[in-house]
Image (tube, helix red, strand yellow):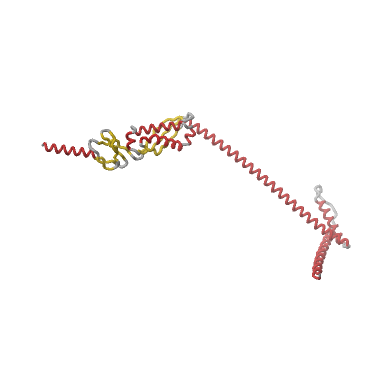
Length: 318
């Protein structure tokens, strides 16, 4: 009986020693080892053997990145606008010893620290700046909180403001302000559009007037050229007819009579007060005159041709 009790006691002792001396640390965790309440070492992931009864596991630290919800809180901006905001914080435990023994209740300490910095950062900004610079706010919070938690063996990786909510009356005022700004911009754009349209119209009218003046100038130039050519032709014709009259050709006289006759008819017909014109018209004489003109022109053409031929012959002879 005594031997059996001793064996049972030995088995229980061995079980206790194994239970208190063997430790398995899962991946992503670090355990601290304490001897009589004092830190003596750190157990990394894997199987470890410690001194039974004397050594014990102190803190079990999660070394993976963790997320911490920051509860909503009210913040007053620099221009006395009250907003409600909340956030999330991501952090890593880089030193299990510091995180275990440098701070008590790590999560609560982190929440209070982040909330305090949110009030400090947002309280130094006006409402418009607060609503339009969320990335800059997150960056400032990250720098401040990471610096403050460095003695705890932590690395804060991100802090994100989830919402910045002004009161309803302030939201309505902001909406009215936004509408007024948009109306102002629309009116400015409309005025600029009208001004540009007026400028375009004026430029078009200016260009049209320039083109019209250039057209009139070109027309006047061509008309002057035409009158010059006509005067030259009349001079040539007058010289030719004068020559014919000097030589006693009656057809040249008929030409002048017919020309004056036609001009007189043209003047009488163009008078606006005359509805009905009664005048003697000797069509036979006029036709005869025109026929005489035709013969005269034909002879003049022949004379010119013969003169040219003679000139050519004379050139060949020379």
